[in-house]
Image 1 (cartoon, rainbow, N blue to C red):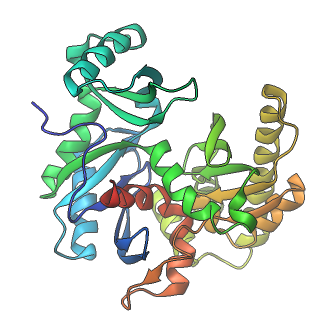
Image 2 (image 1 turned 30 degrees about the horizontal axis):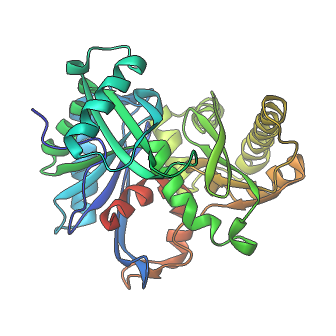
Length: 358
């Protein structure tokens, strides 16, 4: 029996552990929301190709070894971690329930509602719920978020943590962790981004996730098959490298002088076109006809000059996500390196914030 829930609970010391298709990322925060957060440490460790496929752990040994390597670089002192499942592996649903229910009564109501939305037997899933707040429908009702995932998806993440000597005390959803970190980015915009429509574009190795938010609440989401792996493959072909060598050279900046002109700039142009298309899908699918800001996140967002290229194509003010911009930094961290890595640490940062849950 798994001894934790999908939402988890507050832990005295907790690090965010994000396992993506290309790397393992860990972040530890301290401080408080009231007095300000401090980033203590972080690490990014590359994973072998195809160790994680479509968000699923395909090679448990390779991913576990990647986490162990990351942990050695991260340093001692952390045992509890918050992890996340890809949104595609989790069914979420908001429901309205009467206020004042005892916990057992609420559990029965949630299970009854869940049976209508989950296409699996309840004994095959991890099911959890969280009261979000008062419902808009009126007094005496609360809005409750239900989350459910197949047990094998959860157990794969737990097994990876256990193999590295860690305990997964929180299992979150990547999209929710991303939104938590985005809230820190939103506060950096003029007026805190109030009443603005903001497109959060998370560009990973194989997938570009588009989430449009207004006042911090998602109003639209879409996934497109586009990511940095396409550039890595171009590098491998152009310079006769393996995919692993190409990824390493791309990250370290050790490619020939013609790389920026012949490969990087055309890729950024293609990326900007994909973002522009994503915004057009948003406009045609909703009542909205404009976006006030584009915020770029994910591993691809670290490319120099990308914000200008995307802003030029979309004609929307474009910024690079940095959830740590308002935080105090540990003396061990280099501000320049953190700023460069920040866009790829959004999910890990959002998971690390779970330490401060009420």
